Length: 214
Image 1 (tube, helix red, strand yellow):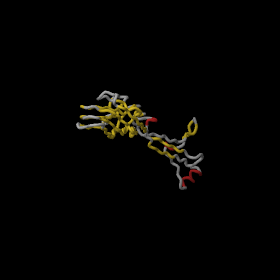
Image 2 (cartoon, rainbow, N blue to C red; image 1 turned 90 degrees about the vertical axis):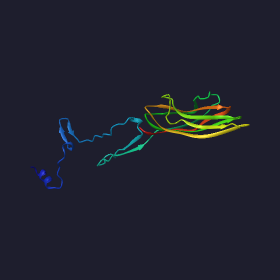
Image 3 (spheres, rainbow, N blue to C red; image 1 turned 180 degrees about the horizontal axis):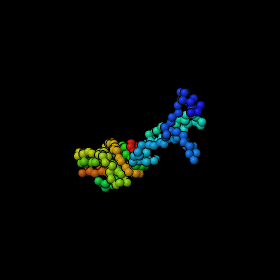
Image 4 (cartoon, rainbow, N blue to C red; image 1 turned 30 degrees about the horizontal axis):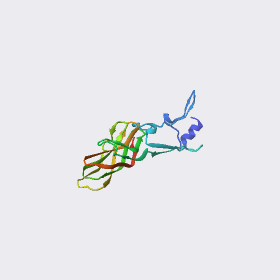
């Protein structure tokens, strides 16, 4: 045993590193222990489709020990639009896109989609079951977004005289899961069982989405 070994054995520090944490001399040079960073198993969304941003702050040059700071921020995508459509020129029981009220869900995930709508209708004589409906439609899949069909206006006025009108509001909301970029829009429809109506308009005052899960 050398004098250096004896000094170390007699002092407070004894070096006995584990094999995975020791310097190793090889023909290619001196191997220094390193760290391997491994994340959790990936979910359905990868890369920029994830709704979390990771921030890494490196240590200052020459600092000892080196301290790395890692943080994460939720960054879900979102968007909104608005629009309106006149329904008088459309056949009854026909879904008509609301001009301007169209959005693109940009990536795979689950989204909260909401449409705040307002309907307006006028009549001059007796009418029965005058109706304006609204829905959120998935253009990409060609189907109504489940649970978003709303009856905005329903009324009967058999004793009407002169010019009459009514406005009403409704809100349609649901969670909608998509497998990739998806176009959605607000649509309106009307019908009347008897009588004549006019000035039928549907507004989407605020049509919006927010991603809630990857």
